[in-house]
Amino acid sequence: AASHFELIDTLHRKTREESAYRTVQLDLHVNLYRVVMTQNLWHTRTLTYLVALMLILFLSEFCFLYPVRKVGDLINMATTINYASRRNYLAQALSYFTRELVLDDGFARNNKYQTASAIDFLVNELEKSDLAVRIGGNVGAIRITKGANDHSELHN
Image (cartoon, rainbow, N blue to C red; front, side, top):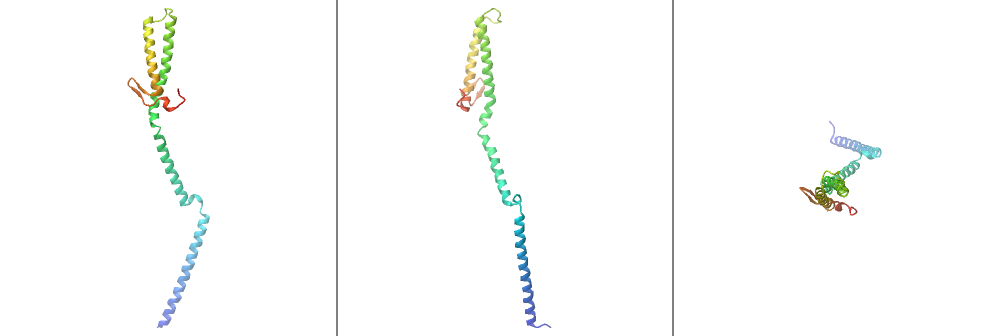
């Protein structure tokens, strides 16, 4: 049987071998980490992904919040364009009826009184449409919430 001192000596030798093994293993781990980090490309690092995710979050918020302030203009745009076209039509009709009234050549389908009442009606409609397009307001059942003067100072 082995003596007590021999057992202690064997234990110390095994402990020294294990600590040397652990030291080698730790050195190997540190060296491997250094090599991997020097070979690690920028697009595979965690920081790159965090920066990209933050940029995506910022752009998503910006793309949502920036157009929200333009929603009122976008809702109103079709009606404004419709009444701007209506102004053009009314100006053309007014020119036509005024020409008919001035010429009075007998070829018109309407008499002078009908043409004069049509001109009066067109002038009133043109004024309403023009005011609605420029400053907003009601034209019949249609409401224009923002006029063109609110969109641009150079409009009129």
